[in-house]
Length: 301
Image 1: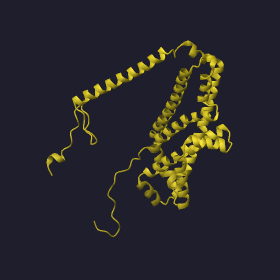
Image 2: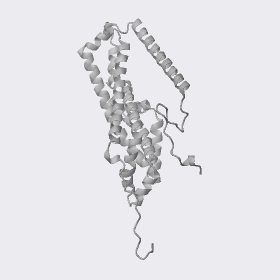
Image 3: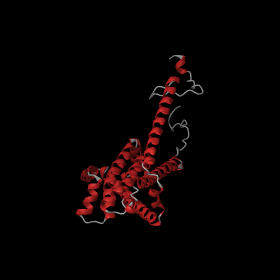
Image 4: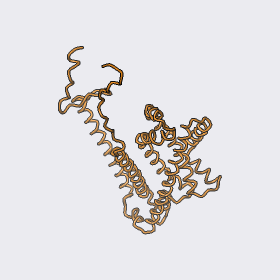
């Protein structure tokens, strides 16, 4: 073996990027080229935004007469009532979808073949069915009120998707964790609850939040079954002739609030992830260095 192989590797000089096995470190020309690409893309996006704003101004979408209805108390109460109904449907669907996903995931991970096959059939069926079809079937065929019909459709679809997320997250945990827990005499339920699920939650959290964002946006399908949610309230304002049909302002207001809710949900997920990483229960436990064991009686050194 050469001495160069035994010598310690020198750290990269200040200002230089550390080498990576996944890609080549960009040089000065590549960094300059990437900077040009970023500036050109930013200018293109700014130009597109300026063009859209120009069209809105040119068509009079920012005129006072179109935004005046939002200052009326009745319009504000209508929007707040619709927002409250949207959040109510989302809260119910999110809780029920998480519970259904956990149950179906446990069934798919079961050792009993009948239970595993039944859970797989339910997951694949509800994942393949369009959400709107399920909502209409519950609302029209089963004669269920609007809110339960909307929540049922969202729960069945998002619960089946979350079931796959939970199952994949549990299976992604290193197999040695499971085997070590079984070696300690733990039962399967204890292994799942105390070993696998806590480690899988951190990996599943971004996907879970993404699916909950989808459920939040899908609550807008409720206006098709006359559920008075946020989009339904905006539609009532837009089609009112007394307000000169402020369709675009209503779309802008409703879209901004939907985007804000989704960003708030994403922020909450990041906060939970940071809190989980800072939890002392998840920190590595220091292990004492190995020491030479004493000889057993009857043995010779």
